[in-house]
Length: 379
Image (cartoon, rainbow, N blue to C red):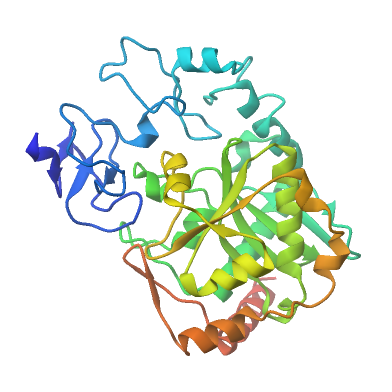
């Protein structure tokens, strides 16, 4: 029993993760008996080492939180392609959840995650421009590796171009976030929907939402929707010349409106404590309590070491204000000046054993110009 609470262990020639799936720290970890995930006892809210086999929250039923060691007494679904969770068939029946019908090769837990639900609606939105209510501004939802979606060649080519531009904007605003396994840039992996056996490094299901002024990208956000329970938005970037003009607020408005239509309960994001005033005062987010974080423990969220998880509860009442009122006037709150005062120039933040550092104003402008010159040379 004590051997379970060690730094490393092997399951059928498969090495477990050396970092906690919740806090991204190492140390003595409780290892899942079904997948490579690892957890600190306190992060999994467990007081003592369990007897026998232990399954992490992601491997347990998303309704009752349990799992039979041999999967014999209760049937359980495969991991859902959309929400990344599993459910006991009996639990779904008691909850009145409809099982999916006429599904493709991927696995879906329920009808709401597949037909006439999230997957079906997202498929119909990909690559298409939609107005925002602000003259000249449109938004698009993009996805890499979109062979599983019905797209014509022209739309697929345009998606490739826009994703490349979105990646350039994120690279201009953020220094490379290097993954310790494979030494890859996490930003590229997110855009490309790269997968991994380690759930904290599995970026399957990410979309890129872009805001455009005419044909130029002004703001970009990476988004992943975990069924109707929640959606996450770990990275947001605005082109420097458009900062302070409400572009992020327009994009966030359209995103929350879309999620609310799909009855997604909350939008979550990770951020450093110094940005609390920014997310709370400007965008209406709040810090998640310990109990609220426990509710989403089984979802493979992208979080960074040393950050706070913020959430925005989604409801129809949040759209009482006209979009023009929150988007066309420049924001009086300048996050760049705020962070400069609080953190000082050149401040580093370490996330997930990585050095995560926002580029300075001069660096952003230089990087944007360099990328534009490279694009011209490739034409």
